[in-house]
Length: 86
Image (tube, rainbow, N blue to C red; front, side, top):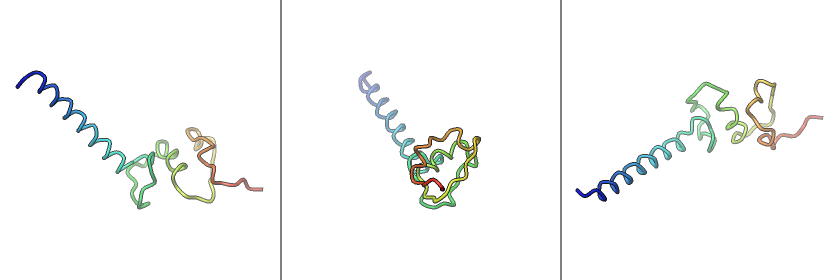
């Protein structure tokens, strides 16, 4: 096997593995970064620190109870669907 063919095989294998991992992460999406889960019972992690930004961005809600510890890693623009209480 020539050196060029080995290198080509290595790159194809490497990028195929990276693509497979990317598809798996996007499909499972444990941090809700790309989309909300199709079934709300699918909770992969129980660490709200990592999931709160994705939940604020992709879940439907009509109210948000926030405090300084909960909004530490959340941008206010993600909560654009809420109206301020008057």
